[in-house]
Length: 261
Image 1 (cartoon, rainbow, N blue to C red):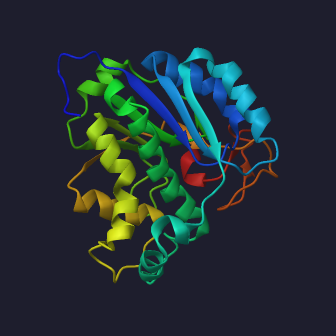
Image 2 (cartoon, one colour):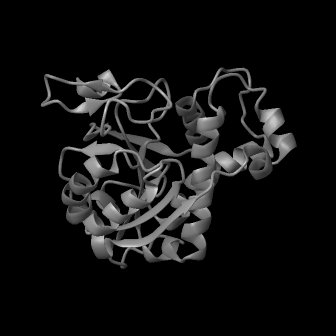
Image 3 (cartoon, rainbow, N blue to C red):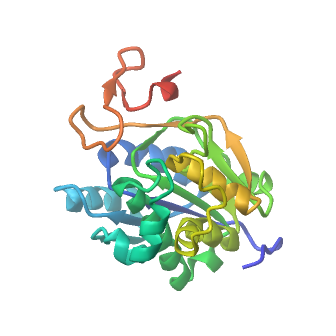
């Protein structure tokens, strides 16, 4: 999966996590990200919401032929997925980085690596974007060639904000299938090998990702925020922070005040 300078750049946009806020975010995603990049889409999401099927139908209608793979799965048991001894040992590292919700995020990344691999997508595409479904995009993306030109073989672009002392893993962009594979597999590999170097720190999931970047010598390129975590109503499911209403920004719903500044 070495980068071929002569190969045309093709972008693959991958959605992980639960299908939150998709009725709100799907159209801006298509207009501001997918169309400028001419990107295809893979969805590998967790079953959680009672209207998941309706959300998938809406995404299929909105994204059309760009949607090259879609799959909803039941959340695995973390102990079985990582191995009971590995999970027990790594759970001794302080912090909420391995709580039930974050465990499912890390599992989702490994499952996405496996899907992209056996479906041949790691060879077919050159630019990979990994993100959650509830980001409301506000600014048009550049063309795929311009995005590719900004990245080296070990560079990963993330958005400023939502970093909490670490790396904002909620939107990550990289060049090359090998780096994409290594990035998606890194949490699983670290947990199953019990290879987190500094086990004395207290980790949130963002700081855990920063540790992975350091251990693998990835360079984190931070772009200005072009999106925010949104919702469809104040009563939407949330596992962290309350959903709020912004009267200063056209009534948009948001979770993180820093993203509104």
